[in-house]
Image 1 (tube, helix red, strand yellow):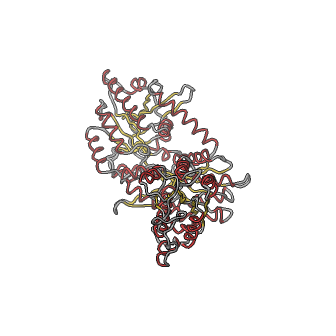
Image 2 (image 1 turned 90 degrees about the vertical axis):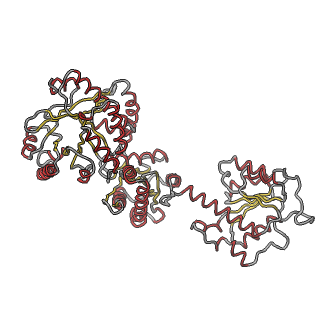
Length: 616
């Protein structure tokens, strides 16, 4: 244990103990330069601020304090606080917030060990590094001090050069620790912790009349890039986008704010997300112009080892304070909500938060919880929308459409239910349920000798990865699903380049009789390049191509060109959204193979579909 009284320094010398060895209270210029914080050149630029560190000393001998202060001043440290009354040390720490504490262990009234224990249990002081200075050589005392939070231990009398190096190393380690805690290791940008602290400060300093904004930037399809090309490629992509955004914020940010002090700051918020804080902005219009610049900066192309070049975009969500909130967490949530709305709206766009978005999010969250129970309560049913031959109007197949009638009377059907499931991380569960229902229904139809046709199930590649889809399909076949009666309708995933293993799996499933259809072909979520990857049998042309002339301009030439392309590639073409005889005449003239839509009829139950279309 620590002795009750301190022993003399040196060999048998009398008088109060001293920090430094006799005659060594000053260092030679050369050695002083080696420990001078202004002269240190270390790997991290943050170390340039070592001389600004606040060093505090707690020692009951004022001579020790005076000698240490003189030495540290000579070594280049500019901020020194001290007390020779240990009972006031903790209070002084709270008021001065030192960067480092030099602590004597043997002191009257309150010992250094007691102070260490108090610091360890204090949320504010527990992270302050402590170097213990003591005259005892008892190893048990050293172990006890280290166990209750001391970072380093020096026995008196102390060699000044060793003390200088211990202080430097301790401060450097602390700075590096703090840097890692506050910065994203991949991009080097300030991280989510720093972002929230900055937002909190901006909210506290903003007045009722001044406005600021939180801008959340989400990289579109980053998960698909990671799955298709590997995490290393995804990391490189995030680094590139981070650099581009940082350059944009630096170059364009000044125009969006009222003063230089309010310049925006870029942060790495989460896995696929960046954030920009605008502490104050001139007006919404100016901010919108800045956001457009961010969108352009975040859009980048890259290739995979010189192979196919891919283009990546971002989606942006904006929450304005104080309009959208003055409390940190709800405001950050609102910005993220707006960003996710921008992604669902087509990506590579931005959306401002609104109360309507919040109401929709709360409703979706509530409905999502109910949906998880709906499957066990048999509240979800599978409907069938016929797909017919354009010339003969004979049945060629169908599309399975899930419908959920909520007890409140609200109905989610088709795309609305797919989106709800995706919002609540249930895309895989819904897809598996649809395949199970189709398996059971196919068995029931075969049992009564119905003439079966292929039924399509929509798979959203923006929500499920290709390996996940492969696993779901293989599990379905093992569970009794007959592949010759299934058409997998692939939607989205425009930025995904299939891996060789996935192509081989899909090819194997196709040989077993399964068909693959590229859904919404020609729309923003499809690409011609998808046709050369997976073994596609047919394409469903986006319904916009068959709208009446004038609705979206005359798209008939584009539709004709698209259908001609499918014929050249040997693919079947399926028109969607055919609701009128006029549209039917249009697709007949353009030699489209099949169609589906309200002209045939609304999606119907399994019984009604079998009675109307599946003749024995």
